[in-house]
Length: 333
Image 1: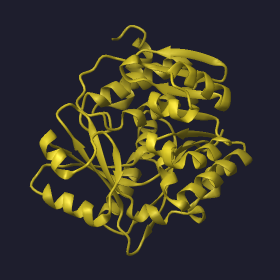
Image 2: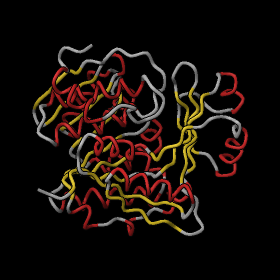
Image 3: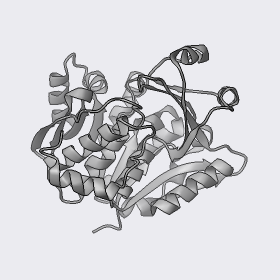
Image 4: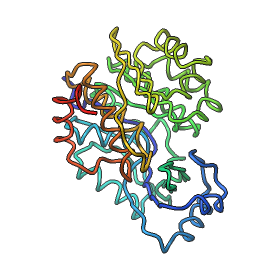
């Protein structure tokens, strides 16, 4: 057995969440329910404009959220990224230390740590403004081959493809993992990743053992008009697939077995991190000997809980939630 079950490679971002109105969102001139890359000066303007508001701050990034969930459920985890040598970088590193996650992340002098300002409107939708900052300097030399070699699985995020060094790093990491007998999962991250960086994503998927996507991403990646046909195509190309469909639940295919997983009823408060939680919870289940159905139920239930609260992390004890779901999942609604 390897020393780490799951290591993620992704952008290290300090999430700063604000509740705002629809009118305020329009005034900021951003497209609702999307992620947009923001220049540092613009990010500073946004933060200054909201200086009198209460903000919720946490260490994050898409795959980082999945890794945090995986660790809090009881898995052994690692994360590879880059930080600035600033107060946000110190905050980020200290959180990972407290969580017991092996963090491999150089703190670069003269660089700011990446940040993501999350606007949450009354309908629970989240609109993200991301400044990559130090993440733009990530390159293949920052990959720790020893960490990759001792990891059972890698989890890679599509968002890294927006940087030239990041795209090359994911390719190298996936190849390295497979060379050492490890396995690779990839999260599509966003439809714009497929639109703009589809060739790079498909290159990485050649060395992947699993893909996580929502229905829009699945249709774009498979070049199919219906979710059914997209799912069939992705299974044939990449083997293991987790395709989430919001209120319609999810479909999962894992080493020859399939399951249709129900969605759990929830009143949407904040959609931030729902897909990240799904990936972290599902991988915790299957990598710790749980059945495909139980792993899917855990992922579905916990992602619904995340949607019903503010922030990307469960506010309740992960171990208690894990044990409750694994025991009662077929009957809870």
